[in-house]
Amino acid sequence: MQAILILAHKNFPQVKKLALKLNRSFKVYIHFDKKMNITATELSSLADHNIQYISEVAVNWGSWSIGEATVRLMKLALSDPNISYLHVISGQDWITQNVDDLYQRFENDTKIYMTYEKASEVKKSGEPIIWWQKYYFNYDQINRRTFFGKFYHRALLLGQTLLRIDKFKKLGIDLEIYAGANWVDLPRDAANYCVEYLESHPNLQKMLRTGCFSDEFWMQTILCNSPEYRERIINDHHRYIKWEKQHNSYPAILDEHDLDAILTNDYFFARKFEKEYSHNLIEVLDKANKN
Image 1 (cartoon, rainbow, N blue to C red):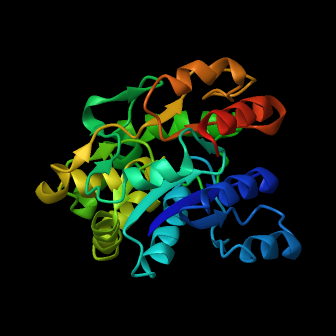
Image 2 (tube, one colour; image 1 turned 30 degrees about the vertical axis):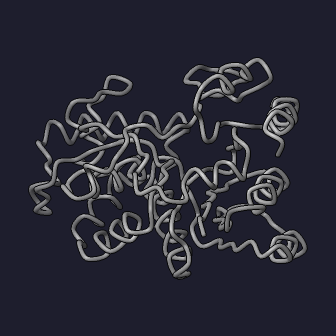
Image 3 (tube, rainbow, N blue to C red; image 1 turned 180 degrees about the vertical axis):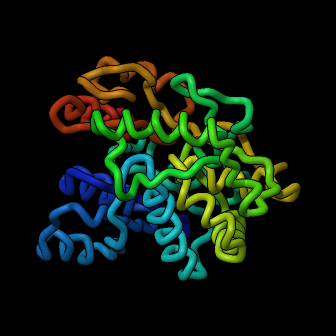
């Protein structure tokens, strides 16, 4: 049995619709951001279909909370010994292949589908992303997306650069740091290795909890530093994500104009979908894939 792990932070009806569609073949687990207002009736409608859910972490953009929610979902799925493969998606994803065909594709697969790159070699928005783990951040307390949050972030970078802060040295982190997307597909043994490694290395946990965008570092750093697992990684997560601003969102909120780009490539899922703009695209995708 394969598991779909959904990290949801908004729009319960859309998440439910996605979960019910995937539930046809997969075992579905959902983490709802604790800040979501969800009624008991809505939750019972999931339980009626044997869809498991938790709501344990208040998720904040830029903080470790997204990674923490992922870890908790993984533990929940791994508690079922019948789960053989796990797929991590967001509540704003949609499936881009036939549900049953996608399930069969992974039935005997031992590969890990995950993007990764050395953090020391990458810059985003002019910042070396290695700083996001080398320095200290507290974005569970500070809203990184506000004007103040953006100013605060720049001040943290400047101050810690001048002070030559090195969290790696202080915590004794001697791993090569890797980064990539939180959206992955991986077999049970790899997911279990990630969780067990994290729990047995408290200083790595401290690094992630005081880092920035740490959900994009934890699995990559753990798996890429393991010779056994690294050789099984395919550096492609097969997600269609449009890195442009569209419908006042970056990455883009998708609409029917993105259909050809999605269907003419080998994608498992696509994101981001919002009912206001993506309703027609969802209908056409489902029809094309017989979902």
